[in-house]
Image (cartoon, rainbow, N blue to C red; front, side, top):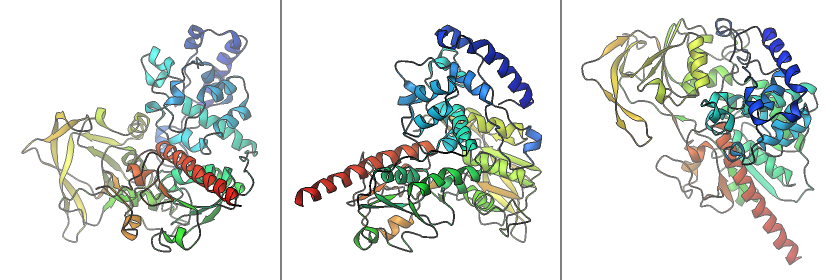
Length: 505
């Protein structure tokens, strides 16, 4: 991303576009490779560390068209193959190059109703952009066509017009489908099933829809207003929504079929059970899961101290344990909530960190301090039970483990103390156990994830599942991919039932 003045960036793009637009349809691959890749304008790092406004400012129209012209329109579209929901990437990118932004939006919405979200938070560098031939030729995945940023541009353009198209819905079939959880998997199922004319009801435990997209991802990466606007499309399609409804407590899962008459149920309740390290001191005041910390800050708006009554721990020196995207989000949120020093403590090296490179770089720019090959041995407390520090061990890398990453090995006698008053634990999450605990006949694996077949169907007839409740903690787009598979299976089940009913009549 670029911290140049946005007007300077825009002016450069206008000049380049004027040069290339006249010969747009005659550009050969070697000409397209010469078009400069476009840097996303962003807020100044020091300023953005004090606010919750979105960090990335988005492409200008000129930037988007230039970036789209870099696409080679390959005959073998690896970008489509690598997209979990199989968006027609060359199709929508060509429309952008031609200045046909509504047509581009229409192409995306054939397979995804969440382009504003995916364009912001999906790890395109390991999915649709990983095998982009432009990036491969330049030996840098970041120099490939910026597919995610173009998707975001199109979605933002459509929203700015105030005329977001609602997908058509087929005539009512009389069939009813329940969607449990309103995260990315659930929202995709709701949309795809509703398109076929089936009645869809979404049951959400919280008071707001969005699942992990709302409670787990900070506003400086994904503004809540955007989540609201994307979900509003479901309302306009006629999807019924019930909030503050905890399936497993308010209603048993199987009762949705046996008592409430739903013809199929999709479970997308996520992986919201945080793991802890099991070390001494984790029960001290000042130790939190990153999940809880982010939920208070995001969903419950604890950052808004004037308007919100949600308490959140006031910190001076914060240690974040872990190296994933959630750890980056928690660290950057702690900075915005007033911490003077924020440390990310990770037991491997930067190379092994699972977080997106973009998020790591943003954190560094904002002043987050990284301590690699370090891990806490115990958390130290004051006499009144509050965190005062951590005893930390140094590590070195050994042989690769089952994940392919080199295993961290503790260096005996290397302990040292780190002065902190807050510890945020971000080492992963387990699946929400409520469904399996209240539905004992449901088959789950040793981690509590629901076991499904290749159509996302569980061992219980008419009940499907997908997203983090199946995968464990994964990405938004992978959850959406599972949602699409489940929706296709549900639609087939209901179509077969309707065909049988028509025969019997």
